[in-house]
Image (cartoon, rainbow, N blue to C red; front, top):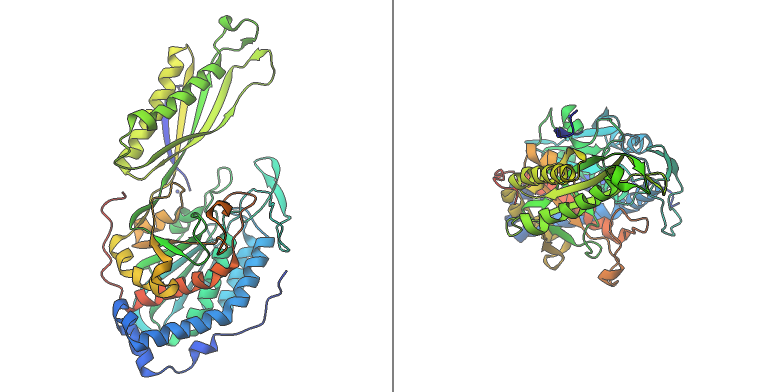
Length: 473
């Protein structure tokens, strides 16, 4: 490849388990008024005595399954697995879903699990999704179930930790599956459970994540009419608090690599060569002006970050080349392409001005996670019934990225955040996701399970309207 070539790729084409079986709570013959609430609109349900009765039944079922959810979470946290390596986690999930009598498919996109629960009445299809992978992070939280797992990642020995809370996602969806299986006879439709590998990205050149799950039929036979997901942490909200936003909620993520080639020479005679370190430093500075001086940030947020700068082996040798790696975050498709162009142009022209060359590779990793506005507007009442209106807030755009956005491009989707900061602790005490000190308060688990169950049952009761988003802003 020539130095000026611009390539854009699309990646990813110790608490014992308590033997409780709470599903009988909702398998009992329910009163006719209770069953009739499934035919009412969610807003009407929220105002009716029967709606309150159904919510109470869900609440009792969640309370009954909660010890198992906690046990699953702690077990998964203690035994984390990296993307496309979630074999133990997937086996735990599949065994549980089979015991619930579901149709279960394993090995989807390497280690993914997809299960189908057919309700006793005809109706639409709704999907619930959780991601399963951990991160190459060495845990620094003092917990009796802290991870001590180590593995090899990119040729280095690393610790493995659920530093993004996916252990909680899996456990909550397993709990929601048990609650929903207990009300199977009354469900007017079908629930699809998607347990996804490699949300953080597959290793090396492997395929994986949401896009590979879809390529292998995760959204087919049957195709969902809507999909819901949630993520713990991300914001500093207290445990159990729910945050939502219509349209663009999490950013599109692009990863880029800039390779600067100069001319290697003795460090004592820099004029005899071309110093790629100095050129690279100028490129780092130049890239910052894309956001600060070239983009209209009243339109949409933009981030351009340089996360790695590698080059040189000795103090008195100017190297032949350096490599920089970074990420681009955007919420608007046109701005995304514009920033990509500007990163390429900035790097190449700064290099050329010094007699060096720069090659820019950009990988489009995930799209904007955009919540369908009609679906979001309709499901806010469901979230409020779960957590209380005072504990449900409209959020701001988050520059983190999530490949749930691929699912939401295919069917109307809603992705919400679940707070995990211990109640009463200051916001300054919150440690963000991906940190070795990330801590998630298990007090958030009940609302997480309730949210998944309530979103599913409310949607099945009244699936329309579900318009498609026309903008990602």
